[in-house]
Length: 240
Ligand code: PGA
Image (cartoon, rainbow, N blue to C red):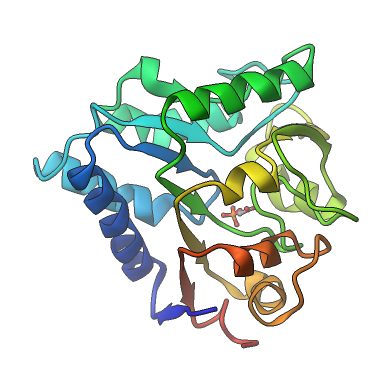
């Protein structure tokens, strides 16, 4: 797999953000897959600054986020929905009705998975997907497992993920379950922009790029995708 190493997360954000902006400039009704966490923030900052400069409009796009926690209200301040509103959606001109999320409180997760897959196909499929990686090699919330997953599903989070994400929960305990797009749904995106920064990701990045394709490192499946752009900082690339 090819990858590019940058000095700083800011430079990665500018480079990754340019790819998203160019997709939207070429296809104003693009369907975009977004991710949460610290990794995408510089990319989102770049997209916001291009919007503020009048260089791009996001009013035609449709968005699909990778995952959402179960058992907390959608508008709880630690939900991924709230994260996206705070860090991107409230700062650009995306139409609220074009924002799509998996419902972490759906009573029937299989029906919810079908609903999301239908919405993605109605939007014409995801044109470009942002992906980060967990310390354990997860993408979305596809935790290390015995088999690759397909469409969206409800997942029990691992201790590693709970430890990494607990910092975002101050008033309530972090949920133990989430609903996530599956590996199959992620792999259908036409284009993937993958970003990893920081030493805590170095082992997962090595396993993803140099290791065998295995559901024990879910990100390794990206070796089989034909259009992945990988941006790393020096720390994340330190074991390559
Ligand atoms: P992070 O999370 O960007 O906050 O490190 C990435 C992930 O868990 O996929």
